Length: 162
Image (tube, rainbow, N blue to C red; front, side, top):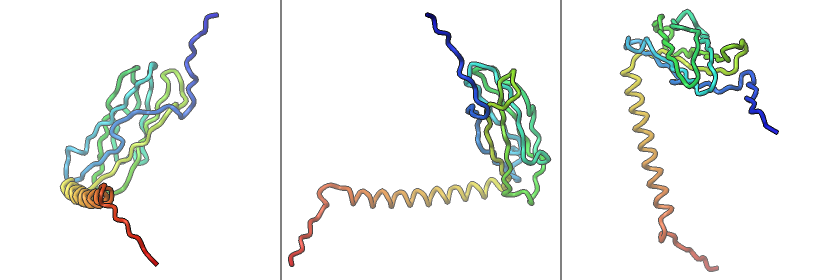
């Protein structure tokens, strides 16, 4: 008897969505960051359609907020920050990328991407370098401490006599 190969039933909301990057950081003082690209990958054997939603659509322009991705392909989605003002510094916004099968309406999967507007790329870089330095210092201390404890031949026995 010949077995038929069945495609597993796709459950609503459980399909993994592959998008990069998973976080967008815009810098007020660097206009080149005001336009960023999300890449949506489709590793599946079937076409996907997508929709981009946002918690604050008045702050962003999403070029081609809906579209399709062929099987085994990817598509770039351009996002522009259009309202760069100090009152938005540090505020976390979210984008949701929903995907569904080309012929279906129900969302098969979704992925959230956070977006933050920061005042200065230079300040952020300095803070990042300071944090990396602190981490390296901490790691070098930890490694040194662990090495002295774990070296063979350094174990000393203490016998107490009463």
